[in-house]
Length: 457
Ligand code: ADP
Image 1 (cartoon, rainbow, N blue to C red):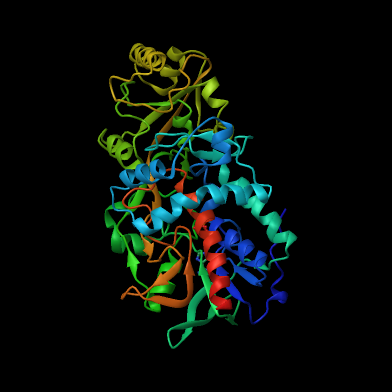
Image 2: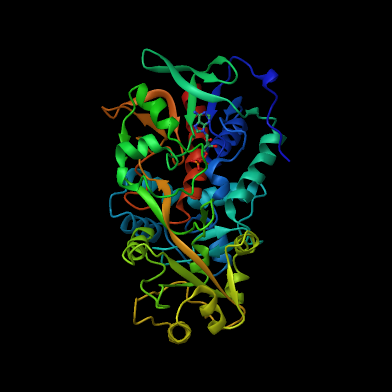
């Protein structure tokens, strides 16, 4: 178990202050440390890892050694183009180019740090298996944070929890420190800050300002995802981009007080979606935006993910979903239909037709082309009731590919860097599953490197 650093050890100066302990914060801290800097990580919550710990599907990257081990020949171009099309061609192309061309290096870097993502799956909007995940098939987020924290501990990088950064301090437009709150106000001096504060998927005020139409939806986000980094940066003149681009995730189980995201890997491994009549209604692996719209068009009933034992064995997270009571089970399809209250003949026909589509690899109804490696025939059979919920904020602080934060005139704010969900633009109007974890590692490393360069130059 990782223990946060005792507050008594807090110093009043560090080479770089990293705000946030999710994937982006931890990665940038390790990278900065390995270049010889002394970083500190400040986390406002008492739980470390942010929304990263909730990520389930995997990490996208192209041209990796893992793909070649699986005999998958991929290309940066395909990764770029599929992400660009999935993002409504609104993606910041400078960021997208850097991102797609550095994923493989990030996979190598993780492997060098004993973080092995040796298995592959696929997410909506992608045409190739490029979503890397641990061969244990454990959800990626918890695994990544646990493993990165081993390096934070090994290097003795100070990580304080329950410290909320409230202001960025500048002199002549250049970063000089941060103000933060514990039980009292503190000041830390530094020449460089990395914003790794995540998004605002749980930030009612920012949602009200930019997307009031989503205020009545639940969120998959941890309560600390309130967009602090955006506000901190804006106060010192940073530009915010794409703030109205908020992703609603199509498959969230929300019949209990907690909203549980049911990862895209469930569909990637072969699950289908059916409506209350027991019929399919969409290409389940279309982009999140399109699948969400198709579910919304059902009129508020939500839909059911349907899968079998074989598919279940491919997604470890389903054990957890079942454990907390989210999974309905039937020994055969008829029994499952009764469990969820849909017409059993129609559901049986749907599954029969789907299995025929898998057999011929042709889905004439909805043109699904991926996640068709296995049919739904191996009982018991399972269903999870889902509906869309607020999930991810594509907008954020404007950065260049060096993770330097830009002001309204597109000039670099000296000493301020941002990585991960806090930064805007990479995903356009729709984030592809598996690209958020990839973003934290690719741009987290980049931030660590660019801080080093900034401080040495
Ligand atoms: P990413 O995936 O981009 O790394 P995460 O959501 O995983 O983002 O992590 C962001 C972390 O930053 C969260 O743990 C969140 O609680 C923390 N955080 C947000 N605002 C502040 C703040 N003002 N001070 C300190 N930590 C913050």
